[in-house]
Image (tube, rainbow, N blue to C red; front, side, top):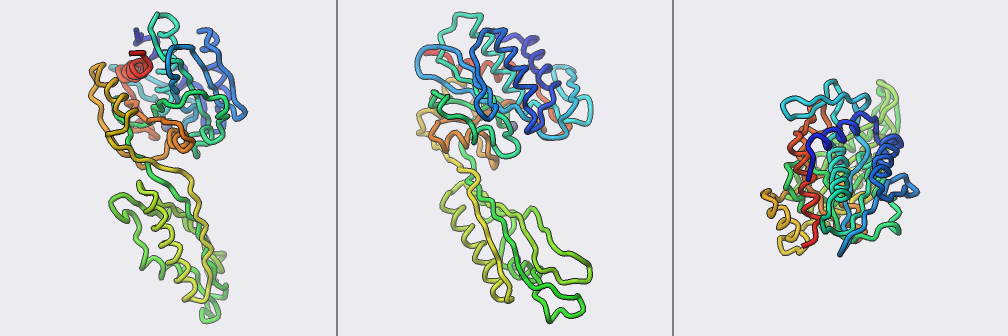
Length: 358
Ligand SMILES: [Zn+2]
């Protein structure tokens, strides 16, 4: 079955390979060498995602993990202490998402060595998830045959199933005024004044029990002694409800445009849907089958909503029924990121349970 030492070594090898978003070539080549040694067929799509396949019986299943990591993620030195793996230095560990990569390779190893009856498996190792799900967005979907599957990209305990992710609108706002010298404010239109008026009507943070608005970046101005001619805002709106993400976006747009018009300036508001969310109810058959299989191996499934957008959101928007599951790492995206050896094994045990034929 799962081999603790083997999966730990696989994981340590993976995290020692630098793979910041956009620089996944070395880790992809490493995975291809491991697959070659196991005699598992694989290919790279046009975008550089690695796709590996094993034959099996029944409906094919997708397993997905992303190859890239966030910064600081170069020169990772993993250490194991009392069954906990963390980075020795100031870097992240990279369990996000190399724990899932290691678990897939462990499951492949087991399936190659043992005579287990299992579904055909398509493993997809995606690039550049962290910077905007680019690997999943640019995946060559014509190469993918599975209609259902699993990402393991939630920094939650093993056994967690993500049942909701938000619809996400990026909103870019340019507030236009008229530049003038600070000593003659009556001759100008200050876009900061427009922002001020807008902010008196906009809620920052939670808008209702399923929607959040944020202004994350404000830029503008040329000199201390001048009224700027424009300022630019980078905003975002997330909601579990597709209807609400749109109504809130319209409301935000109207507030900026009204405030600008009132001041005699202008507001250019560009809103773009970057991600489609989803919400599952317990009558979803695939969700039920998944929780039942997790339960069967003695792990208590638990259900969580996320505010993040993992690759499975992209797959779902393409009509593939892909769930996102917890892989047990803690403090991801920080230098305190850690995962236990036990959880590495547990992730691969869950994967195997999800692939086994009844
Ligand atoms: Zn991740």
